[in-house]
Every structure is written in structure tokens, then in C-alpha cells.
Length: 327
Picture 1 (cartoon, one colour):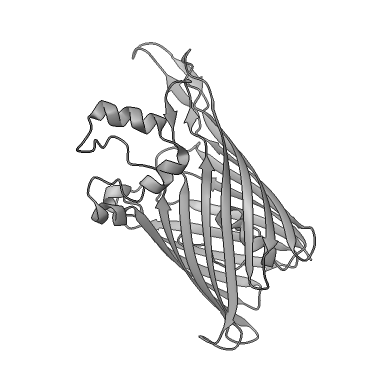
Picture 2 (cartoon, helix red, strand yellow):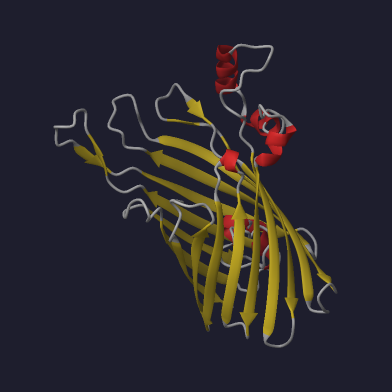
């Protein structure tokens, strides 16, 4: 659905979008596995794997966990064009554990803890795998509404993810991990006994300060030193006001996603969406199309990316998810 999901209907993939949604999930236990062949237009050996599961502790509490593994394929390093070189296999993975709880009849919260390991495998003597610890803070609210009928639900969510220490590969230079703030709203409506629709909107802001910008009252070296020493908390707040282009550029840093979903008889789903990122901030613009099938306890979902920009490396990207739920 165009990467919209922070306020969507709770499901087995809520760990990624907003773990606070687990407090409202209808099942007692479930798990899913996702596979994404990444950047297939460029290479054929970059893949993303994602495994997640949850277990309801009682009517108020849910415990969930996930593991994410990203392999960058084989890379050949050479010092000269003539030599054979040597091959390395860079990879990254993250382990998550989340706790979700109902705070009221219509409101829930969650905290997730994450361990991140990034192994670029450059074979340089002074380079080592980078490690970081991070946390997510998420909330979810939903309430009945009559906007599209008596069986409608209006929901809102927020997830501030990857709040954690900087990562370093050489013990000297420290880099911020991608802290994000995602806000979203959704509307679910049961049109009749067989047909259900939902509409979603997400806004996303990267909470990392702009690198390389020298304020008027300092030199480039002063700013580089300040950037290295800046705390994570200060960086998050500074990210709202440090763009060289002022407020106009700050607004360009907000990406948005629109998504729609249709279910027939709770067994067949059609999905569509659009993701937009400003051309000065990455220029990712694409439509998505997807479908889902549910067989008793099993679900199968697939999505396809349709780029707006020509020569987009994300073209022809397909994502698959297989899930199982236990009432």
C-alpha cells in the first residue's frame, strides 16, 4: 500500500510499522516470513529476509519479536585492474523485541528494543563490523465512526523508530543510525457482510541532522566536530530546523505514502498505493500493486513496485509474505 501502515488494521506485520497495533490484534499467536529480492534491475544477489512473530500474554498485553537480514551479495575487491581480487559478502541484520499494551479501551502503546549489526566486510585492517542498540516508541488509537457506515473504524498511529546510539566501523568516526518519525491515519469500513475497504495515509520524517552544513557563525571544521559530538536527542530535535534551505527544505524532507485495500469475504485482498519522496531528498516515487489470499490459518501476500521515475533501480521489485495465525 505504498509503504503506508503505521495506522492500518493490526496484522502479523505490525512489528515493522507500529508494534502498538498488536494490542488490538484479533489472534492470540502468529508469525510471518517476508522475502524481497532487492534492486533486481541492477544485480541478482541482493536480498532482504524478515521473520516476525507475536504472542498474546493476556487481554491487555502482547509480546513480539523479529529478525531482519539484509545480504548485499558478493562484491569483488581489486587494487589493480589486472589482479583476480577477492570476494566478500557484506550483510546487515537486526533483532527486535517489543512489548505492547492497551492503555485504554481505544488506545495502546509499545516499546521495542533492537540490536543492529552492520558488517560491510571491506577487509581493511582498521574496519570492523558496526554495532548499535536502539529503541522504538509507538502509539495507536482507534475509534468507531459513521463516516462510511456504522461498521467503520478511524485510526491514528505514531512510531518513532531507531532511537539509538551512533554506529562506527573504525572506532573513530561515528554515524547516526536512521531515526524516523512516522505519523499515519486510516479509515476502515465494512460495506456489507462480504466487502471491506480501507484507506491509509502516512507521513515520514528522518530525525537525523543535515551533515556538511556550516552555520553562519562557525567554520566547516567546527560544524564537522559538532556533528560528530552531537547527542542523539539533540540531533533529533535539530533535524527539524537545520536544513540549509530553511523551512522549504525541511518540508521537502517529509515523504508521504497513500494506500488503499479491498477485502472480499475475508479471503481475497487487492491493494494499491503511492509513495512520494522529494527529488532533492532521494527522488523515490513509485506506485505499488498487491494482492492477498487467506486460507484458514494461512495468508499469502505479494506486492509489486511500479516506478514513476525512469531508470529507477527499484523497478520490478516484488515482495512476498507468508503468514500463519492461531486464534
